[in-house]
Image (cartoon, rainbow over all chains, first blue to last red; front, side, top):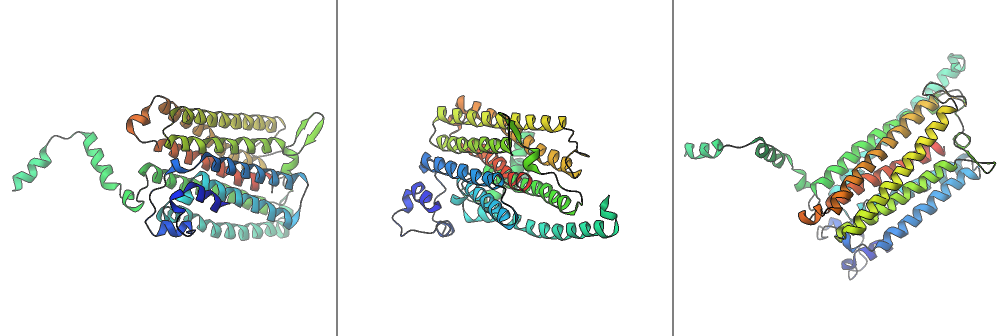
Length: 136
Length: 231
């Protein structure tokens, strides 16, 4: 899907034997993204995908999917939507490596924060249950 | 020799010139992010910082929700609407999601038309984006009104854990503020497009930069939708 979009968007990459996008950027010979070369159809297609993914995540709630399956589905649809928005709508797929890494690597630190706060919240929960009479 | 150097420095220079030199000296990012418009690099860095702000809200929401002993209100029921005598779960939020995604679609096309220097379609699509955004904020105002009438406050609510109200108003309020600011920014840039401002300067980057901000607002909603409404 993404490859399809890029081959539309970059006719000048077409003669090369199917280059991986990141490699093309990294090699440094990729010219600055020429946004006028992206056909409008690419955006309409992504728009459609986002609609489908949103509908699917709504249906997860509608049909009361619970437990691990609910989390798996919600997080999958969420990450797919976020990926499409950042890569295509925000043109991150066509940016240079320096910018991509400067923006996408720092948020990885959030994983540590989430993990620590999850552990802390669990600790607080059991403290409330065991020593504070359920926190009431 | 010394006087020659001093002559150069003694030339009368206004604050505008000094500021230009100041920014020139500090604008090292132009070297780091080659072929990237400085405004675009700065917008990305602003969005990175905004990512951390919204993440802080969502992480604190997770911490509260996981540590609280009272049952958390069921979003599916709290945000249900009765349409035609039938209660449909989460329907308003679903419509808001589709409205915001549509606004992202029109914005992406506006950026594309901007780089083709098609003034009319660019401005029209940006105004359409702003209208979608205004619709979203209106629906959010409706949702807030509904919940406030039902007795939801930042410190209490009739459905369960008290922290629900604080999380709801803080997270959706901050996001709604972002959407509102975005609508104003889109209208300003759209009017500049219409007046031919960017044809004269030959640089349509402002449209793309406004677009980056707008897509980010949509991106944040993807996470709010998943974590706050679907959890």
